[in-house]
Amino acid sequence: MAQEERTITWRLSDPDMGILERAGLAALYMTLRAAEEQKIDLRPLRWTTTDLTADSVTLDWEGKDEDAFDKLFAWAWQVRDGVFYLPAVHREAEQRDFAYRRVPTHSGLLGTFLQHNRVQPRAKGKDVTKLIEHLEEEKQIELRFLAIDPDHHGIRPLEDLRSCFQKGLFSTKTVSLSGWVFPGIAPRYSAEKAWQGPANRALLLMLAPIACCYQRLKGKGNNWVFVAPDILDLSEFNEIRPFLFVSPDAVDVASLGDAGLRFAAAYAGRSISKEISTGCWVVAMGKVDYYSSQSVRKGVLETKPTFVSVDRYQHLLRAFPNTYIVLKKTSSDVDQAAAVADSSSDDSEMDEQRDGGFFRAPSGRGRIADNLVDGKAWHDDLFSPLDWDLDGLERQRKKTSGKSVERLWFQNLSYQRRNLMELIEEKAMWDKESERYFIEAFWSVLGSLYAQEAKAVERGGSRKIEERFDDLNEDIRRSLMRAKTRVLLRGYLSELFAKGGRQPVIAQNRETIWNLIDHPYDWKKARDLALLALVTYQSKEHREKNASLQTVIAEKGGKQT
Image 1 (cartoon, rainbow, N blue to C red):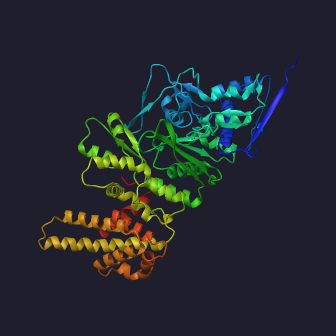
Image 2 (cartoon, rainbow, N blue to C red; image 1 turned 30 degrees about the vertical axis):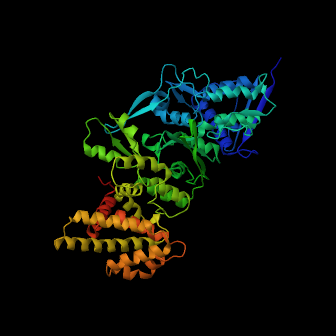
Image 3 (cartoon, rainbow, N blue to C red; image 1 turned 135 degrees about the horizontal axis):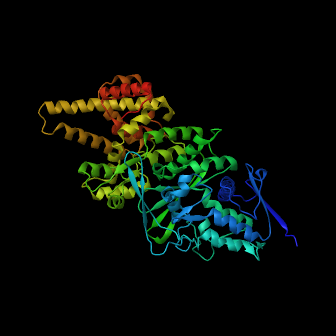
């Protein structure tokens, strides 16, 4: 007797299709496309070119539903050398053949969706596996990960698939999925329930983690971020997703805004239309003291990037790239000082990776990226660290004496002086030219105050000039940070500008500068700009020399070394 032919169609526009369901549909689309490329036979499932469109997927088959989707899921969720291999996204031969190329996705999955030991069966007799990835110019990084049982028995998407069928056919009853499909919000009280819905929707949620992107977030513990894209075009996403974040230096991010805009910028850079993605859902997960048995959500951000925010973020990423830090047993004190100069450095990272190195997200990029997501000025509250920076700053504080977390953050930003100068000099980063005038005015005041300190030394002062400069900088920084109201800020800046004497740039822009200082609700911008000018100060001669050098480099089309 001929078997009944069955068919099913999913559309991005179907009712109740949330962002994760649409991500699951994209994962299904990509898995089928990958099967076509590799000439993999997934029968009894069948489809034609016209069944895979920009907004829908149609499948048909004969026989039992469970048999058809068992084969699909077994191919979609694979393990090679103890590391997840996802044909939908690992499309390049190097990703298929070399486990180290898949480790970031593997670790991201185990730190978010598949974090619980009941849904991540580890290889027997193994705890942490180490792989060395050799980079260009004799660089190398050591990758550490939890290996998965090569037979991958017990992986939750494969196990939960059983709940979608009754007697081999799609269940007509409501299907219940455990909390892993929405990681970090597992039911903890009797009134809370796991996800419930139709079987065909559950299939998509069990594929959704494949389409997400994974990045590592600095901070205490092993914090991982997953970025769930808001997909509008399945075909375009299939062409772009396999090439996102494949480089080792693209894994680490400094904040949720950093992760969201990095995804948007990378996606827009590969899009034929160059249109900005409508957005994404960024979720950070990690351990907390009060719930240490598994990772919980430590932050959620919905990003809707604009052309302006993505363009500015691209400038930010060029000025603040992840940097490679070498850590060796024979490294000098200078090398070690450079490694811990930034709050994102981790003690355990230094202790465990002595024979190689690691990539570090620089201080400040996270705050600036979050500002761009929120539509704020990029320098807004730049001198107040994010929560993700506090653990690193506290570790740094314990290694120093007499320095507060606030002062250490300012010090770390001072190490990024050249990077910040790149943003100051980039016109696209500014909404108003008057804000740049304010920075130049503050530089001129600082130059005058430094000159006054130098003259005091010439007159026979007891302190060295370096000490006088350091004390002056710290006094200005403290006073600016303590100016918590418009009146206090106005009073302090007026006094400081008076001490600096008559400066031409102030005289030429007096009204503009005063309007920033005395703005009724936006006066904080003047404080942020003053702090930015303080941390980036260079003498006028030095600035002009650097500007001339950059002009020559740009004309030659080269890079500064």
